[in-house]
Length: 120
Picture (spheres, rainbow, N blue to C red):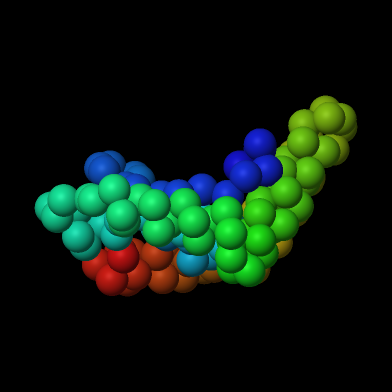
C-alpha cells in the first residue's frame, strides 16, 4: 500500500482472506485474482491476465490506482514526522473505515468482513 499501487489479491491462508476483503471491498485499492471461496479451484493464466488487465487498462483500475496513490501519500506523511505519526495513522484508518476508533465500530467492521468471507 505504501508504494501507491493497487493490489491483485489471491488469499491462501490465515489472515489473507480478511486482508483481501479489506483491500478490495473497503479500501477499494485492489481486485481479487481468486476468491477465498474458490480456493480449491485451479487458477488459470487467463484468470491472472484478466485481473492484471483490469488493474492496468480499465477505468475501474485507474480509479483504484488513484486511491492507492492517495493512500500511499497519507501513509508516507504519517511517518515523516514522529510528532504526527500516531494521529495521522488513526486518521488514515478512520478514513478507510468510518468510526473505526470506537469499539462497537470495530466489532461491526469485523462482523461485516466475516460475513463477506464466504462470499469472497
